[in-house]
Structures are given as structure tokens and as C-alpha cells.
Image (spheres, rainbow, N blue to C red):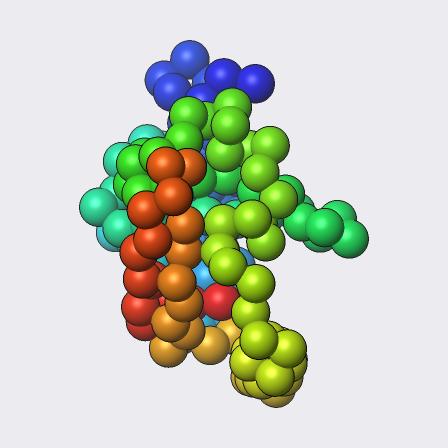
Length: 130
């Protein structure tokens, strides 16, 4: 599958789902732009945005340009990556706390975690919304 681009509308439908879900859960807007431009705006945004499926071992199904750069992966590599492989294994208690907070509140917007790029470089994500 080609990465988001003008020919495929920058995955307009997926972008619209991400935007509406974010607003429904947080009460905040993810981006400000005209409706017809949301796919391109999300893909080119200066913040990292990723999503994954609902499989037992979820696989990323979207990463914007900032995410691809941060993880040092091409689009095709990124959308084949199980999301758990983007980070070092979490402590079980830390993961249980994260999931309990997301379940209780519907989302959290203060998540901090260490991530790993394809080259092995580690980097922190901070104040992330889950």
C-alpha cells in the first residue's frame, strides 16, 4: 500500500476517523484546517501521530511523516510493525496502570514512554494522548 499522498487523498477517511475520535474523546481539536485538507494536514503535521489496529498483537496502520522520521522507517515498514516493537517492554505494573487509566477516563493525555527507532536510537514521547 502506498503511503498517504495526493493520489490517494492522503488517506482522507482514516484521517477523518482519527480527528473525529480524538475530538469525541478529548473534547479538543487535533488540527485546524479545511475539511478537504485534513488528510494532507495530518500527514504533514509537525507532531507525531500514529494509530494501530485492534488485532491481538496490534500492528500500526498509520503514521504521519513526523512519525516515520522519528521511527526511521518507510511507510511500508511502519505499517508492518507490531506497535509493541516500537518500545522496550513495559513493566507489567506500569502497563496495568496505563490501561486502567485509559479504561477509567477513555483516554489519557499525559503518557510518557521510551520508544526505539529502526536504528536502535531511543527517544522519549511525552504528554502523549492514548
